[in-house]
Image 1 (tube, rainbow, N blue to C red):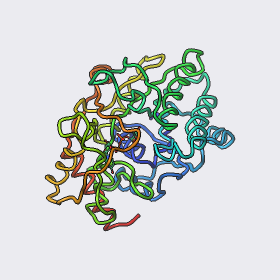
Image 2 (image 1 turned 135 degrees about the vertical axis):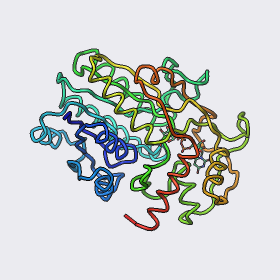
Image 3 (image 1 turned 180 degrees about the vertical axis):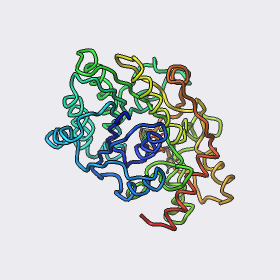
Image 4 (image 1 turned 60 degrees about the vertical axis):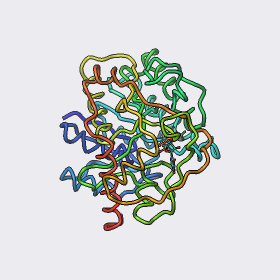
Length: 339
Ligand code: UD1
């Protein structure tokens, strides 16, 4: 059974991907430093898959710890590298933390596996496109100057990967540019688990609905969109997780070199449409107000996903309603079963 290292495997997307790896017959091994995740998620994963996956707790910026790990787990076939800091605002306040965490860890992984026949899947973001000139945005669109140190780490990471492949240090690498991952596993046993006040829309909505947070602020209703609020391409985290399996399958089937793929649904939704969808599927009236625009937000972005549909042989299956309902079921689970 092919062994796949999942860095950040206890995080939101990582945990769902671990479950899908097992469903697809892979053997996941998790590294996570718990800096933005909860060890209880390991047990939650075990409840879904029926066993506790192998888990190592260390910071990937620590090259010695990584080399010790490799001595123990020397037959890794693939790596999915999620582990990174991802709060845009924090990255503006503390850029060096972001450059260190996100870049050192990637370089350490590349050095540790240099020249080996290992598939690598990297978590990138549609943030690399900034506000695209044309929508839906394709993978060929120019990368725009980053709006934040966080966004810059994704751009630099993609450059590092491209250069490493060109030099033969890495053989086969795919960067996946995620749009807006939301929702939770249908079991409601895993989902997004923000530490502190959620910065992202959907966890803020669910926490507000359950009474953990106050009023939701819709950041701006004066954009040039159908209802004035920003447009994003929300994708169910389970669909997103499955795309990682599709990428690994491609990498394992003769692919060499470097490529990038958009992962979204190809559909844009406004903030107000998300609010309305949540209210419709849950029957809960949300307490929200219109506030000023948030600094650094792009007006609208959604992806052209024809390349990933074709080359990864993958497509999304879950709609906005399922995204909202599953996120809500997870929030209710958490309220009844604090982790
Ligand atoms: C953000 C980052 C993106 C990153 C992702 C990681 C920015 C500009 N982009 O995506 O680079 O990869 O997080 O998680 O920060 N909104 C509200 N009220 C809220 C929260 C959000 O109206 O309380 C709106 C935002 O203005 C935006 C939409 O909801 O239009 C989605 O916001 P969010 O979930 O934070 O994701 P992004 O900003 O798209």
